[in-house]
Picture (cartoon, rainbow, N blue to C red):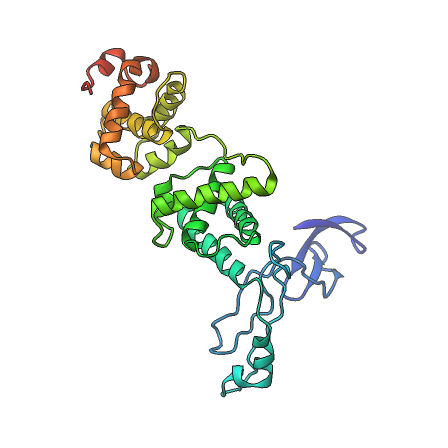
Length: 312
């Protein structure tokens, strides 16, 4: 509801918009202040697959500045009641005669969108991945390479640049069969191409162990207090020279914090939830062990309890 001036009430009153009739009605006297209004907001409902072969969708997709025609190309639909092959008719032949130059881009954007949805990524990361792929595609140098690996690498770089990093293993799980090695090679290739285009190094963003903590803890179903202790421990660990990858440090701290809680997690479960090998977690635990009394928050565990932990 909103306020508008009513001629009968002689003052501003609350009005109700009747979407079905397009009328703006005064909520106090019932006077129709405006009729047959045009609703300029998005039409979210789709009518597809409700009438068999006839597709009564009245609007197309949103505009896309990365496509040559902005995503506003015209498609001739199959006429109602036509049983013969539409593509063999004159209209169908004319439509197929001109190939869409953006067909490969549209398919690539759909694949990126599917991977993003499976990882639960926000729209800004998906849009950044689309932009990266468009820049690489414009250089016409990616032909012959594994397309799934290229798209996965674009998504990985976009996550890094938007400060929402994902591990290569997480990206690999939605990459339609592309291996970690293929994605790694594709990432190096894309970064090199972007540097050639821009004439400067590509900013990838810094990975911190805390970037993965909440997601890893959620995968393990940890309690809120344990998650809070793990996040504080990760921040404290950055003060020390622990020469391990951020993902390994995050996994090791999660394992340590759970061992200090009532709900202890086996090393196998932590390795499965974080995607870090058990041996790597043990080695990171060994490097962190001398600093645990300064890393683990005092409100979560006393010094005696920390010292009672099994030595690596």
